[in-house]
Amino acid sequence: MIIEIGIVAGEIWQLLDQKGRQEFTEVTNSIPAGKDLALMALGWLCREGHVVLKKIGGCSYVQLRDRL
Image 1 (cartoon, rainbow, N blue to C red):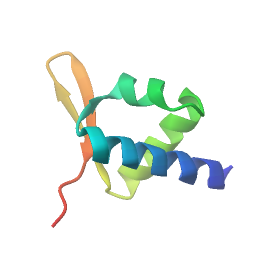
Image 2: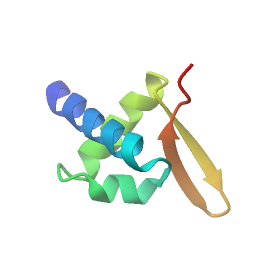
Image 3: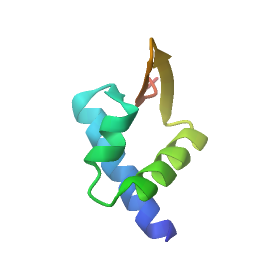
Image 4: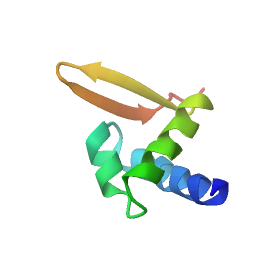
């Protein structure tokens, strides 16, 4: 299972790298592996400090952390 989560994390990384900030639901819905794996992968990326979650108005967004 950890391998699948890592693969999906890479897919999310590529999506955010190409498109920039995305609504949380857009990210989870666009991953073909399914919502559960997408959520686990987002948690992994958050824990590792690779993405930032922001609440703007009534929407939640996810984006890659700025690179130094």
